[in-house]
Amino acid sequence: MRVTRTVCGIFVLSLITMLCSSVGCGSKSVPPSALNSCSGTSLSGAVTDSLTGLPIAGAKVVLETGSQLGITPVYNYTPATVVVTGAKGDFSLCSNASPALLVFEALDASGNAYPPTITSVSQTSNVGTITLGSCHVACGFPGQFQSSAPTIISGVITTSPVIESGIFSAQTAISALDGSRNIWNIELEGLATGQTDTFRTATGTCSGISLPCASYTETLPSQAPVEFVAGAYNQKQAPPTYSISATPSSGSACTQPFATTSSQSNGSSPLTAVPGVQLTAASLSFTGCQ
Image (cartoon, rainbow, N blue to C red; front, side, top):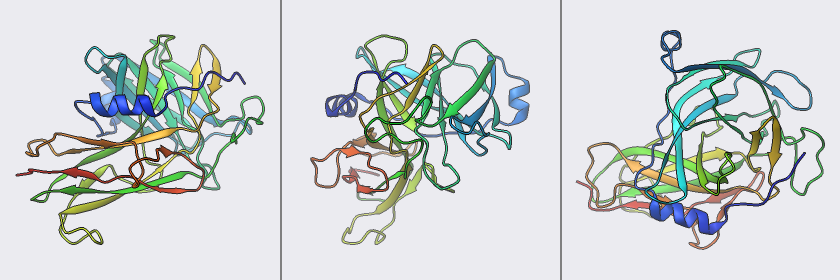
C-alpha cells in the first residue's frame, strides 16, 4: 500500500468553517426510471471486501458534486444521490454533474466500519470493482485495520426564540484527488441503521437547556479515507478529523444561515476520530429565528 502525506489539520477545518456560505446536506435516491432516462453518465459497478473478495451488500454509494467556495482553494462536495448495493455488491446510478466523486461507506458483519473509499467520477460507465478496507496489500501502519469500531459524534442544535427544523451533516477534508493543491471537503453519510440527517428543535428536549433544542448522533468511520486514484488505493496514516454543520430549512429566518463546528464541547479539542469512542461536539446555535 502506498501511504501519501498527511493532510488537513485544524487549520483546514477552521478555513472551511469560516468560508462555507451554505451546506448541502440533503441526500436522495434515484429510482430505476430515472436511471433509464439518464441524460449524463450511467455509472455501475460492484463493492467487495479487499481481503476476502466477498461482495458487500448494503454498502452506501454516494455520488457527491462539488463547487468551489469563492476564490479559495476549498471545494465543498455534497451528496446528490445515494444508492445501496445489492446482494452481489452491485450498484448503478446516474451522474449529471461535474466535478463529481463517488464515496463508498459500509459496516462489516461485526458492525465495524470500513474506512470510506473515495474516487473521482470519470466518463467510464462501468466503475468496476471497488474494494473496501485498509488492507489492500497488508496491514501494519499505526492505527490501521481492515475495519474498526465507528466513531460516534453527538451534540445539540438550539434555535432561538422559536422552533426550527433543518438538516445537519458530517464532513472531513482531504487533499484533492486531481493532483492540485486544493482541499476537498467531503460529506459522509451516517452508518447507523435508520439514521437521518434532519433535525427539529423542541422546548424541554435537552437536559439543562431551556431554548428549543434537538439532539443528534452521527455514526462515522474511524479511519482516514482510502483514495482510489489511477488504479491504486492510498490511505493516510493520520485519523480523520470531522466537522459538523447544520442549516435551517429553506425559508426559515435566523440571524445566521448555517452553523459549523470542528470542536468538542470543551471548545478546543478537535473532533478527531477514535475507534469506538463517543465524542460530544460543541453546540450549534441559531439565534433571531422567526
